Length: 133
Image (tube, rainbow, N blue to C red):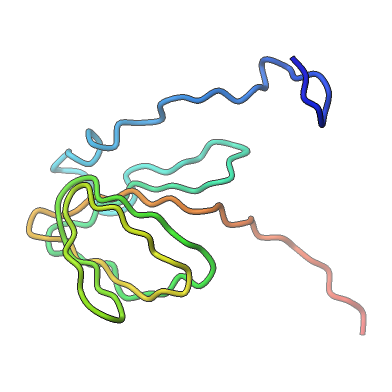
C-alpha cells in the first residue's frame, strides 16, 4: 500500500476505525460523578470530544466560546439551553450546533443530563521567543 504524498504506508501505522466507548452505558450510571465521564485522547487526532455529566438541577454557567464551533448531543436526561435570545428545552437525542461566538449556558433537569461534545482540536500551547527590541 502506498500514499501518493509520502510513499509506502506501514500497515502498523495505518489508522483503523474503532469503537471507543458506549456513551449510553457510561451516561446511564446513576452514581457517575459530575464532569467529564470520557475524553477523546487518541494521538494524532484532529478533534476533541468529551462526554460530560451535569447532576440533577446542576448548571454550566453562561460562557462564550470565541474560537470553536461545537456539536453537542444530549445522550441521557433533559435540561435547558439558555441563549441570548431564548431558552430551548433539551431531551435525550437533541443535537445542537453551538456556533463560535455564541453565548450559552446549560441547566440539567431533575434527573441530570449527560451530553457529548465534539469540536476541532485546540492547538497545544506553544512557547515562542520574543523578538528583540
